Image 1: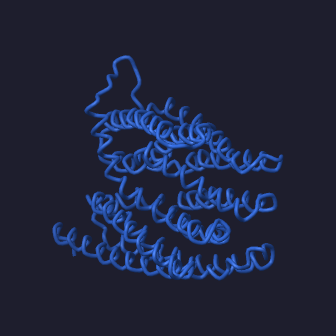
Image 2: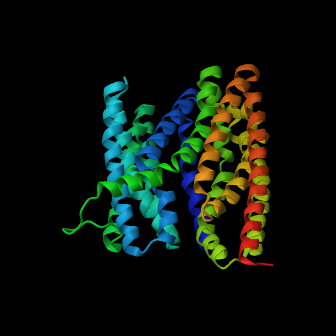
Image 3: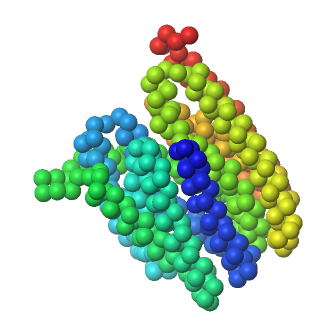
Length: 404
């Protein structure tokens, strides 16, 4: 049941923004569509640094620390995020010539999202799937409804900054209520801030920064380089069909949300063969649903969005690339719980840097076709490496624990 809730949540939290964009396509041109995509990349970048990967750290500490230590460390993590918020904001205002009002909106939104991400990770580990879904829907619905209202009533694309702030605030209110009710932070008269603990939590989060930046680079590189070499119009076409294809990654995210407690249990009970079978079955599910997704996108664009028909030339490449990525993300999820989080973080970052270089030259010399082909090649290599590494690590666990 939890898997269905997680899957529905992940689907709806991605579909609702996309449906709103489909509606807004009547009010916003293709170039503005591409511009909006770039704004969201900047917001994701700020969330990575201000939040300092609180979701990943929470999912690990939840299973490894006592309840008091867990609350104590997460309190200091959030205090550290507050420091990062002020430092980042000061640097942006002093050294960059950008609209300060928009940046302030994104900074405050990123801090509120950090608190919400902590609560969402705690809900996931406690397997409170329904509450998790409600909190996610609150952010998505309030953000997108307010944005559609502003655009339809004549406001420009930049009104998105106010919408993301409003949506973050609404989710933040629920997060604060959950924190207060469940006492998952330590704020009382006997609580003392430990700067050494803040530093330790900063280091725990920073371990995942290469990974988070790697994922961000992997997504952002395509959009920025397409915009640089080919223009916002091509970004608009590319991202239009890409967003249609994202249910593949949504499915992978839902599977990982569902599997997190299951992976921990199977590793602790040493049921390694069962773990292999579960991951394989979900991989097959991804492939099957991706084929259906391809057919749905093809007919939908041909029937209702002919002005984006040129984007269909990218569709099969994007689908194949995302299938490979979705599968390797499922297998990589296991590594976090067998002491390999640093390895995965470094691996993803290195892959991202290699991708930046390859994508740069691919787009420069071969245009959009070069990008589409290089993405498939990179994701295929990463998948093969991940599966081989997964098998080797399970073999080590089996041999060291006498499992047959």
